[in-house]
Amino acid sequence: MELEQRGVILVTGGAGFIGSNFVLDWVAGGYGAVVNLDALTYAGNLENLVSLEGNPAHTFVRGDICDAALVKSLLEKYRPRAVVHFAAESHVDRSIVGPEAFLKTNIDGTFTMLQAARGYYDGLVGEERERFRFLHVSTDEVYGTLTPEAPAFHEETPYAPNSPYAASKASSDHLVRAWLHTYGLPTLITNCSNNYGPYQFPEKLIPLMIANALQGKALPVYGDGQQVRDWLYVGDHASALRVVLERGRVGETYNVGGGNQRTNLAVVTTLCALLDELVPESKFAPHKELVKYVTDRPGHDRRYAIDARKLEGELGWKAAESFETGLRKTVEWYLANAAWVESVTSGAYQQWVTKNYGERTSVAAGESAR
Ligand code: NAD
Ligand code: TYD
Image (tube, rainbow, N blue to C red; front, side):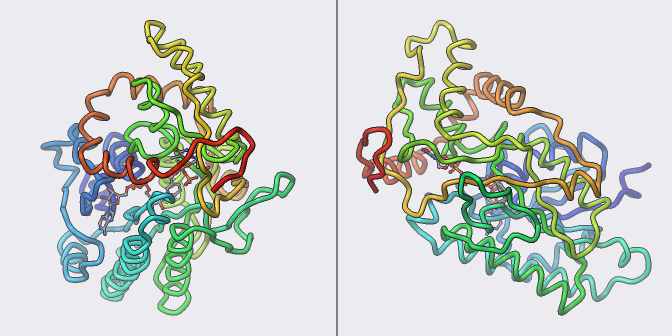
């Protein structure tokens, strides 16, 4: 099928970690053309998309999702068959230090996107109207925290967000729900667990630990390191989003996760072992010795786990990577792309590191100092 017949999708936040992986896979798979709206905050990097330079299937627009006139004009100009909404402030620690940007982008920005999409959808007729979807990409953090024995989050789990980030994403999910029920906008929501993989900004656990270990810096484990996250390789998230866009039932929520629950400490020690193996000449091996327990994150959620049976059973999605294969691929990618890490860890990044880690004291394992 020709590119034109497959239609255009409007992606927001497509220069960020998950967005850029999604866009690269979408274009490589020949699923159609992409208009990519991204403000290029510290988390957005055009370098993630260099392989698409000159490719007619990708149009990049630098702009803010809170700019209603811009979003409206893009919808009118490109007439997308779907909006895939990734753009957000996404880092919990930053939301604790400065929540304002989270409320602005995640709540106001989603509101702006919904209003613009609603205006555009109201003007569609026939097949264009039938086909249109608004896919809102959200997180499992809206559900709050689990005890060790509790069943995994499912689509009916009540919302109980605990961090400013989670609360702002929960708010955006509620707006999406209201725009479906009140205005009939054909929306879909996905709530996904922690992602990892290429192009993740080195402020998040996995790329931060790889970058620090390679430089012989301390590996800062918050609190006792026994917090559990459910990890999914980013390419599997992208494939889940494609499936939901294609076959998901309008108005439904789908939880996305790979069934890989690990404690943070287990993740860090596995990464250290991979680095010992893949960089045998490192003068910092064994890298595990770099682990340093530091003051815990305030309000730190103890455990996340996703029940993805609805997505698997109803839509036939399945993760392709296990945690072991995905983590190895990820470490190999970071080793091969040191220049990317170098270029994204600019002056602003250094300021963040000083702010977030400078005030954390070293604590003994098991101590719950804050
Ligand atoms: P990210 O921080 O890497 O990227 C966010 C992107 O949004 C960046 O390119 C940034 O420039 C852009 N952006 C920020 N504010 C903007 C604005 N006002 N206007 C336009 N663009 C703006 O985030 P990510 O990890 O790729 O997450 C993408 C989405 O997936 C988010 O909505 C996040 O809540 C969700 N999510 C993330 C994870 C995860 O583990 N990272 C898990 C589940 C869900
Ligand atoms: P993160 O990657 O920030 O994702 P999220 O908070 O959205 O789950 O953190 C993953 C886990 O790793 C979380 O429990 C906090 C912990 N963590 C550390 O122990 N040390 C660190 O330096 C960072 C960034 C995270």
